[in-house]
Length: 290
Image: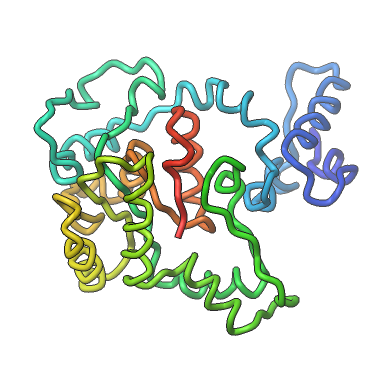
């Protein structure tokens, strides 16, 4: 039995992933026993500080992305069938493509190929505004997978924040990135649409927990540009009673395969989608944030 503290108490504050791994390898190699158990409730090996800290994961990315954890990652049949059922809604195209659920699994990168012409937006609403206020008060940065240096959209916490408080001007800056208005969303979409990695976009899918009337208002605003053939959202999906419990996973699969993706840099859901996109060798300049 090993307590987390036996390893982590000797680490510096907020260590990067490689330092944590090396220390655990040192500890495990010193034990002459084939079976090791971590003391229950002694803490996790990789905590939310690691996944929420800029630059904490980059130095293990090559080994992690090429490990079976990523190369053999696959969505469950329940999730894939929901995608297949709604594919024409999400990404109407005259090009025939076999259903995911009918294909044998070979690898993550072979299975979840790009949906050319699809732009996916991740728009958090509801009580996320309170969370955005909290992030602003503590001058938080983007999640670690959202801070890789070759992702074009960067965010540095503005100066002037304090311990649990911030200026009104800085709060507005955080909200524009974390809880954007319809006008700000439309402006960002127009900006991304002109980039090289987004050439040929035709359809938009909005991952959101927003109220139906607000989502409809957003869809109408995006359609007014005249640049997109279809604009749909999570609220339009046809899901059976089982699939409703994994609706967020279905959204993640769609975001993973999009030609271009605009997400919330503070969101772990956006972060995990970007992890999958980078593991699948999608262009990193196809990733954007509000």
